[in-house]
Image 1 (cartoon, rainbow, N blue to C red):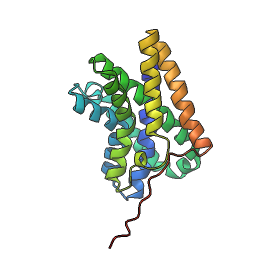
Image 2: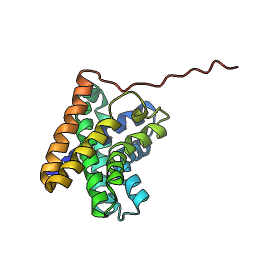
Image 3: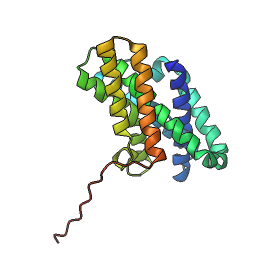
Length: 204
């Protein structure tokens, strides 16, 4: 089930990434690269940091095909996608929790400490979007006021806690996904934001 959700998530992430590439007037190669970086970048960054190989897209090259096709389709139906903005926000929230849980599981498989497991989940969930924004010359979504990284941290914490105390990976996955998804969707619905640090230097 988690694998199916993962495929849905990378497809949705690739499609929304294509729009970011389009706003920067990129050609079809740029569109595909931005899609790959967004959909698969989080797991890639995680694996590089922890020396965990092979990369998911090396072991499963079909992920490159799926995300590239999704991005190119998005480029052709961009006008329709803008009308489905809310749907893709929901799918992005789904991707966040799915990537986070997978990131936690990968770190557990290589027997990393709990704090690093949590960090692994957050990196997997968020790093792809950061790379996309950097390449598109935008302030990364993660660093703005949205409850995004916070939702990833809560998702990972719920997963780790339940898996540790109850011992059931399935239960931990389900509850972590429900809690993380609920938090992210509620933050979108009610426009919950993280406190911002605003500083203006008056020294000249």
